[in-house]
Amino acid sequence: METVRIGIIGAGLRSGIAKNWHKPEGKSVVVGAADISEERLERFLEAVNPDAFTTTDYRELLMRDDIDAVAVLSPDYLHEEHAIAALKAGKHVYCEKPLAITVEGCDRIIEASKNAEKHLMVGFNMRYMSMYQTMKGIVDSGVIGDLKAVWVRHFVGWGGYFYYHDWHGASKNTTSLLLQKGSHDLDVIHWITGKYTKKVSAFGSLDFFGGDKPNDLTCPTCDLKDACTEYSPHTLTQCAFREEIDVEDNNMVMMELEGGIKASYLQCHFTPDYQRNYTFIGTKGRIENSELEGKVYVRTRKSNSWNELSDVTYDIKKEEGSHGGADPKITEDFVNLVLYNKQPLTTPFAGRMSVAVGCAATESIRAGGKVIDISQSTVMS
Image 1 (cartoon, rainbow, N blue to C red):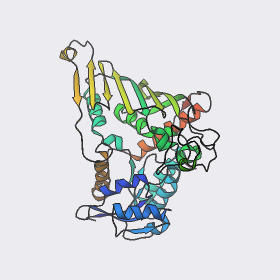
Image 2 (cartoon, one colour):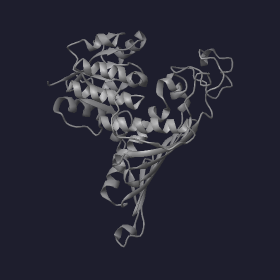
Image 3 (tube, rainbow, N blue to C red):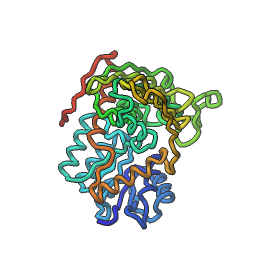
């Protein structure tokens, strides 16, 4: 195989990543797409490849011999079904995070990959962002000593638009936004520390969104649109205060990782700004990032060496491409995985473990903060 022929399942907002794969003169081409919406398929043809095969039945896509690999870009609750079907059809699979919305679902996908002897890659694009690769490099260098604490604050500005104006707002579709949104951050905590979470305790609630509005109410048809702070006239238009919304919009998670590292993850969906703030504290110092400034700060404590004489600021260079330049790199990694068996920065098990933490934290929240142990043993059912 010299060129990977890729099919897409799910032509919604995330399907824009397919542009990185469609390189007719390169190592990959996008030859097909499946989505239940013909309108989305038409937009996909215009944006990516006008000659691609399209269908409203993803099973027709999987039957094609001219497709080597499939990118699962469908809603979270369909990842398990689509990924397993693609693997059973003999396709390599790229699956957007979260891998599934249950730990058991993740285990079933991983098992299907092993049985099919096909590659499975999880779309953790934050591992490919320059800022977080820089932070991992600093931690791995040992300049801040042995890691002891991690603090993560996630201000989800525009969280109402992306998560409460469509299917994300119902737990039946996501389990919790600690999976859909939090899986990135939980994975970065695991990746940079090199340790997985052993147990969690969490608190959370639905403090702003949700309410008593009809489930079929849309912003353009609402009588209160001129006075509503969450008015959304385009693309994602379901009312953010409708009855079916039941996923927490304000979460605080406490974790104990392997080796005794303590970590916290705070996520709020009704903040006015959007940023992630990470702090890693070790026995010799700490590092902290500023996404808004594009900087990583390194501060060291007294250690009887030259390290205590100065602090360091890293200026993160801007890169081309969506998600801070991560999407071009992660899509290339998938192609190299399929063509050359070159292992990417992510692993299916890492995808499973971020879901495991998100599910455990959600269980803890809904049990009043109960401590939940997290097993690394797969659970098949």
